[in-house]
Image 1 (cartoon, helix red, strand yellow):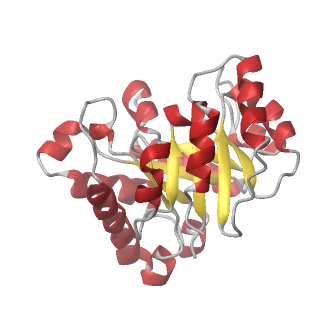
Image 2 (cartoon, one colour):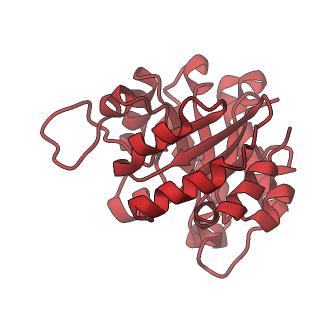
Image 3 (tube, rainbow, N blue to C red):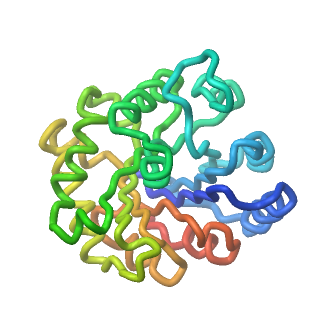
Length: 254
């Protein structure tokens, strides 16, 4: 079975004391993910080493950066390189989150560069894709997501692709009052897997974990994760509430 992943994206939240307390509250539950399970905490940059220390080699738990630079090194004040992340033992990095695309103008080619840098440093990219409301209303979601994948990932070999996690974000259903149904989630995940299969083959596509990033909560995680092509979630707000995220971890397929 593909790896099933509960990834917490804390975004720009929590002071250091609250961050430590949240990690402590989750870790004290001593949840042991199944052999194919993985729990990832994407924390703000200043907390990376603290969070990694809290895990202290805990099996099937890892820390992710929320972003990285598309430059290897140099005079880029305020940026953080993949090499720096690798040097402090970070194994995952979110690439192309919808908020980075929308607020900071990150384009597909830039994200391809970030993916390449991550892979070169043995960091697993969590590559985000997904469409906004105006795209969904015109029923253009398939073409839109396909182009994101083509522009940022199609240059990779099959071996490289299998070192990537994909996260689908239905941006149109986040903070708009609209709700993506379980069926809509499965449809898009199945479509994404078909795009991968068209380029790299069914076997390779079947090995890629595709996470759902559309307002995953304790109340809907089990149903969402039960979909054939949904391999866990990239969780925002619910990951800041220990009991919620604990239930989400426990909802992963075994």
